[in-house]
Image: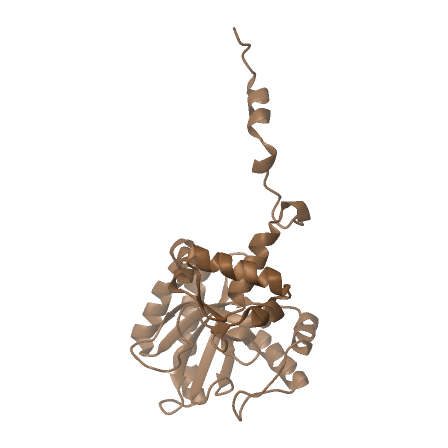
Length: 277
């Protein structure tokens, strides 16, 4: 008859090495990382709105891979249905949307924020969106247009530069000012419109003011005709986890009118979401 194992022995046996979870915030060991997955995702990220079709050499240049490695990853993506090939050019297929759908259907943030966006849209009859910081960009995770065609960037999955957008400045304002200045120094501050603020010192000062007043207001700096007001979304610990905005077309509303109309409901949404984030 086999000897019975004690509860302690059973627990120890069930804690297999591959099931060990590192404490939150602990550095990840290199041996625990899958380099192939990392590089494959880099290849997918190499494609964007400006470069929807790329050659093997262009993918290699944008990812830092060798040409041979880039070729293998692209052929693998084609085999799996995530990319297509037309002679020397490669492009992503609609199957890549499965990756974003997995996030949108499972992540807590978009599901919690979307109802608040709908309330703002019904009250103000203007577009509203929420975004998170991703490198140098703001990634839109939820949005509603209120039936108005304002900007193609106001939809989930789109990316916009953080430094010249209201959501971006709100998210950057959550950092210490020294970190903000270091981040600005790494950006290519090319003007998007005649109103775009491109001076690094003035931009840093503007983000500092955003931190002090608790909201950002951007008047046609990112896109002509687009005016936006944004506030940070805080969790119950007071940490900034996202940004929430209201956007209008300049022909319909002046900047001071937008702030007067949009800030009170934005503050209400901010307070409500802080209780559940």
